[in-house]
Length: 133
Image (cartoon, rainbow, N blue to C red):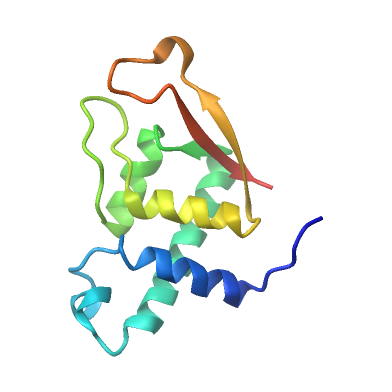
């Protein structure tokens, strides 16, 4: 049974998660600086993240934390914190949070993708892969 969730409910729930990932150098010093326009700014950023992800998935069908092109494009457009790795993608925390929240809201499908023969020490053996419903 699919639970119906309003867009506002999804937006407010995701905003709470985003507060820890949005860079502090944003408009008015970022979310943690107590800027009075923070809520409107964070709603707008969340919607921009979702729009970017939808456009990316329309063009590329799927993405994951090892999708280097996706994370580079996301970082170039929005900035944020990323996890340094020796090779491959450097996942952006905000992008991964947005993908997870969009999945929880029922906007995306998520499956486990094993890396198989491409696995290297220090790298995950599997990752979540996301695509549109």
